[in-house]
Image (cartoon, rainbow, N blue to C red; front, side, top):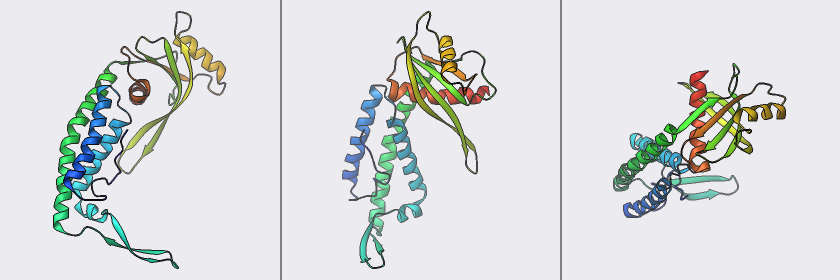
Length: 238
């Protein structure tokens, strides 16, 4: 995917038409991915840049501090660098504000499309616990089936909790374990028995069967949505 640097709108030449070209080229690739129902990493990247623009728009003092800097003197002996701000005049500030406003207006519709795709994928997911769920279900396995495909993808997961001064957040780390072909004799229940035999350190692991009734791109869409949906499911049920 095409990438934008964190401060793409204030780096290099501050020219509206040039920055507009960079942005529209980036959004064109984003929309191509969305047309193929491929969400990640494009949606997360797009939301990051959108929020970054909003932050700078509301905090002009931070924006001024983030302007590109030019080396004006180098004291090699002391390894000291003195920088001079490139941009200080009001006209450049107005150009930057115009770029930011244009970018926000054009990113917003793309984000809405991405979120609509995400919500649709999530609505097609079903999550079922396999067997008895332990009291602490934050470490275990999940089996992921993509539509009518017989191949199931098995992952080990671990839900992590981190917090800032205002709230707690949950994340999830996963690692690929194996695949298996689902059949009448090879079921999610038999998978759990196999996982117990494989890992003696988890005698009764939490195991979930996650299935979509429609096929989606696995790595770019289904797996990322399944991960977040599983975190939500476990957090609500625990």
